Image (cartoon, rainbow, N blue to C red; front, side, top):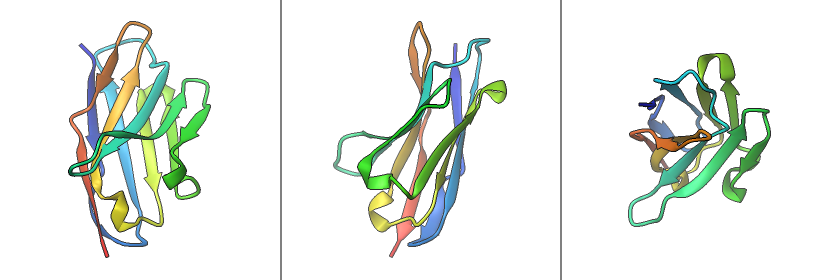
Length: 115
């Protein structure tokens, strides 16, 4: 069973930075796509950024130029560097990993940006 463990969330002031990490375990395969989603209170979960095993990236318009997704395939880990954070970035951030046989979610990590 694949497990995704996220870390790096917390409380930061507007304009600050945070780096999220998500490590996958329980499989010898590398995920086809890994990425980050977020869900704010009362809102639907939305895609933030994704990255393929080959390094191709995709970002939500709201985070382009501020967030950077990267991955270390040898460590089965995906990262999200978040700069110039805004209060509207406040949400629970979820890691997702898609394998050829199934997709998996992490438990989520809270990111709170104060104004």
